[in-house]
Image (cartoon, rainbow, N blue to C red; front, side, top):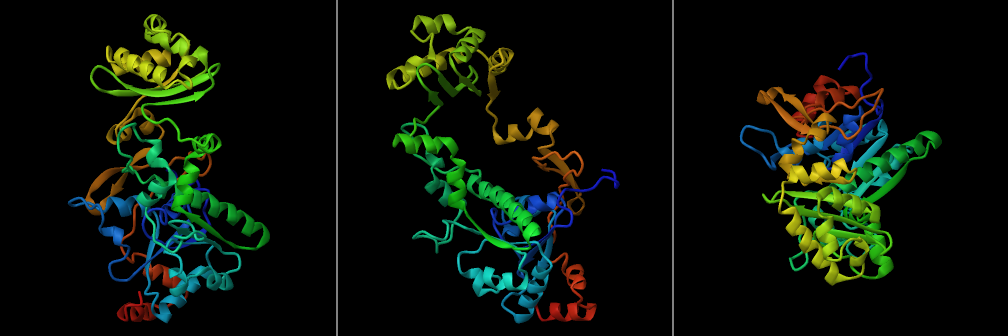
Length: 407
């Protein structure tokens, strides 16, 4: 990247984060990707516990690296008055502050909203909890699996007759992180316009409920759980829709999505299935709307038909008829998907310490004038000296703070 090209649209934005885990760190990692100056506060000995999670031999922690790349690490003992004083000096210069401790912990450790707003009235203060702070369980700690369990996503991806379960991808954490990212920048716009900061509260549970989108609205309006499994049936008998997955003859899965009877006719004709479907009474998709027996019969017939050919052929035929269709990727396949790679959603970064060039998340945005620039995660306390020097501490004072384990 040419030095003449500005790096990231968030240049000049200063962030301080007393956050761990995923929902509490990813919002600020994304900001760092986009040029913000992000300082992550860690405890002096050991730092963020996720530094020691998912560690492969001779490699950094995949968990810590994914969630903290591009930020600066400053260690502070917030139980000591000197440590809190340093934090307050950093906050005085910040635009955004983030924390995701269980409710009440921030206040005990000197970085609650009421305390920090006195130091910096323009501050945007982001607080992330598990359940939200108003309900009966607001005082409890929360995790991604807890939010998946309560928020409905386990049912959304369940199969009839099988146990519901939470998934391996941290969708509650990541959804909450993205909402925090957008909410913080919205509040920053307001603060820069009016000079007034504010506190933003988000939760893992709230993010998961939002993630359920229109499917949850339909569920509430019908007062009935949705039909789950390999197909999502939508619309009316006159204008039916379907999104469904099937395996080819080698067991490789694919998906297609249709809206309206014209799509159904075009898709099934392109696949060569229409004569068989008409023979069985499925020339129009609307016959399965509100008819469980017909739906089960149709899906069974399609299972048989798709099992006669290959996934690549089926997807090619559907796409050739302008029908939305795709192979269903495993995570490893997704990381090598041609569209994923071509758009930079997965990229490679040099890790000099490990002598490797490794695949990492790219950026989901493409800015024409201020491109994003993914970095790598810091070593513990990497930026103590520079951060404290910027606050006016002399090398002697920094050495004393280190000797007394304040940093």
